[in-house]
Length: 152
Image (cartoon, rainbow, N blue to C red):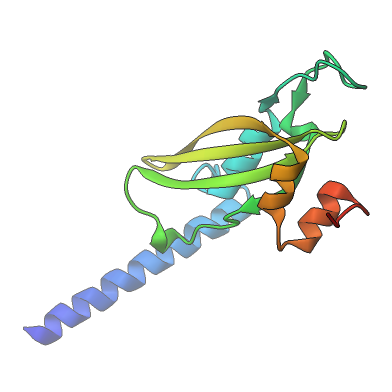
């Protein structure tokens, strides 16, 4: 009986692993819509995301989207699928810099809907001090956000 159970478990695990690999291969080839890939869905929805309009400066009154801002840090960067569970699968924080020098925090709320992801965004402005605090310890992100002015 134990041998039969262990054989069944081995076959089931093997079949699931093959199915996942096949799905990833088909998505990489463009055969399948990659809506199950969280990173792809986040990137697409972020590009169209509206950001607050500047009231003064060179971009005053002009609409701003995610495609126009620079993402200086994503935290967390990736969510391993085996750590995700429940209805709210993951949240990620994207620290951004607009072309006019303003800073933003974009929070992605990621919900799993059957075989696809539903990503909703919340965008909040940050001042330079809070941006520096959020990026503390990440020299590459600080350099991307503040250029040569990385020191306090």
